[in-house]
Picture: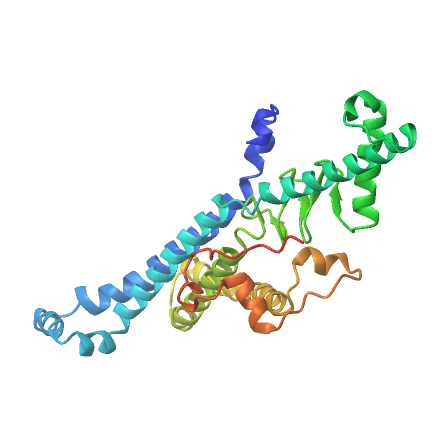
Length: 323
């Protein structure tokens, strides 16, 4: 909404175009998969069969275990929609979840440090002015210009001597691994990258959800590619129309292409989790302090310590690393 408030409505709408394209791609695969493969498979197995065979399938419902494992169509249908539902829920959550603001408590802690350092500097100035006497009223001894200079001096000391990081855009201090996003115009905790496809930054608050989204997307595209290969083979070896031949071939080959890209992207982020490094830190390509805490601790930092929610679209309640 920042673009809307600034009167740049077209720019704001433009930020949602990549997400709209992503949704259309998913809808395209779903519609084509259903129309050219799954629905014909369902019709051939249930609608086109004699009544006696249909009654046989209904009787098998009593023996649910035999029924499930003997009918691949039901398994394909249920598996497809479960993965698709999980993908959709996670996609919505990643888009609407705030990546992670700097905690107010941490900002207050820095402000208290600055205030204490300024008071110490004022005490030293007053002590020099009055000799051995200590001033009890700093406002009467220090004018506004001196106070501004002290504020600048103290901030520079925090940056240079104590290694505190300062954001020039926000004009505020920020914790370790916190970065400023030019698109969001905000500093985010443990910012990984700004994802144009999701119109949101990926950071401390939604990185686990982003990994879940990649996982669901990979399983979805892999499932479609494996099961749709049968439709592709049958179409290529049948007297299908040119339109269907092009549609099925394009869909299958496009699915394979996306699978390669998504596999590489997912493997990179799994390696980044293992190495405890963000995409921004990897792209900066400059020396940084080691953050290795062991593979399992790095995993716990992202996914939390409860394995039951690792594969669910739930963000764990982990504490961010601030200092």
